[in-house]
Each structure stands twice: as C-alpha cells, then as structure tokens.
Image (tube, rainbow, N blue to C red; front, side):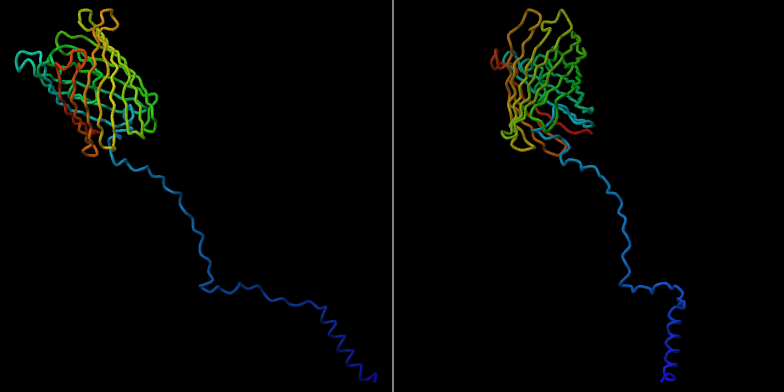
Length: 305
C-alpha cells in the first residue's frame, strides 16, 4: 500500500513546486489592424464664418415716406428743375410770363450732416419762376429781380434723425452769394422738422427759417418763413401732397409787410430706382394778393453717387 502511494505523492509534490515557479511571459505585439469599416472618421475643423455686409437696398434713393431729414452719408443727389410763371399784372405777354431753370445739389456727409447748394437762371426775373421748378424746396428767399437767382449753400445737422423715427429735427445755416446786380449777401438759420405717420401714410415737413439780407437799402431785409408740405404716400414710389405755409417779410426791422401764404399741389414719383420726377402747381402769394400769379414746375432728381 505504501509502495503504491509513493509515486502519487512524488507527482503531487512536483506539481506544487511547479506552480510557484516563475512563468515566462510572451513579448508585446501591436493589436491587429482594424477593418476599413471600423476606422473612425477624422476630426473636422471648421473655419470661422465670414461676416459679409448686408446687400445694398433695391432702391438707391431713400423711401419717400420715411426719408430722413438728412441724406445718408455718401449719397449725392442732383435736382434739375424747369419753372414757368404767369401773372395778371403785366401789360404784355413778355411782362406777365416768365421761365427759369434751377439746379440743386444735396450731399450726405455722414453723421447726420447734409450739404445743400443751388442756383437758378431766370427769364423775366420779376416773376422768379425758379421757385416753381425747385420742387419740394421753397425755403430759400431769392433776393433781387434779376436774370440770376443768387446761388446759395446750406449745411444741415440732423441731431434727431433716422428712417425708423416718427419725428426728426435738425438745424441748418444758409449763405447766399450776391452774384446778381444790385444784390448783397444774405444769411439765414433754420430748424427743419419732419413728422411721419406710417398708419396714415402721411409725411409732414415743416419748421421755421429766418433769412437776413445784409443791406440797409434793401426793401425786404429779412424774412421769417414757416413752410408746410404734407405728403400722402400710398406707395413707397409715389407721393401726392400740398405745399403751403406763411412768410413774414421785414418782421425783425419794425416795418413788417403783410404776410404771404403760398399754396400749391405737389407730386413725386420714383420712375427708376435712382430717378424721381417731381411736379407742382403753385400760387406763390395765394394770400393776400389772391391769384394774380401762378406757376408750374417739373424737376428730375437722380442719384449722382
């Protein structure tokens, strides 16, 4: 019995000793290559978005209803006008009929500044028909009954302005150069005001201007004017309205004359994106002199820049 157990004990002892012996480890090998379907997609790096300026407006000229008091910076417009006037006071056709050519420039200087300038050429200066052809701009008192309507220049600052505002206001200074004979320098200050009523499609342009003729010999040495233009704008390219207001000659020098109240009908139409046509019929002194004079004017306004 003992002889039979001896080989078994020896085998068990050898197995126990072999369990405590160090095990030989295999060398490291890289993992097997992944199949094409198991390869991860590379990390994509996106470039920052490019900020592009907003596209230019489809209409280069500002909207007729919400047009600000001062043109946007960099915008330059030119207006060419033709005016014809008649009066019942003349004794012949040449004395009671007159015509004129007018020119106006408006330039937006940025930061709500605008530079305006104008001049005119008259045929029968007694009627000053250039005020008929200057559609939408009758705030300047042209001195002298001559063949030249004295050139003028004005600078406006609109301190409350914007096409998204219902109320705009500014201040302006005016200089008039004595080109015509027997005329002198003229200066003025103004306070242009604009109201916009979008629901009623109404635009109201008013304010007050004071212009002074720098001559003691002039019959009219100063004029205080309150122009009023009321436009109904049923569409962004068309406006129809009335022109009126009141003018007080010599109101500051103690020899004030009777106030004048003009009246007229005005229309503006944007025929092309950069071209507007304006027409008006006007009674320069509807009161107190009645209808002894009247006139018709047409103008072309286009964007020069």
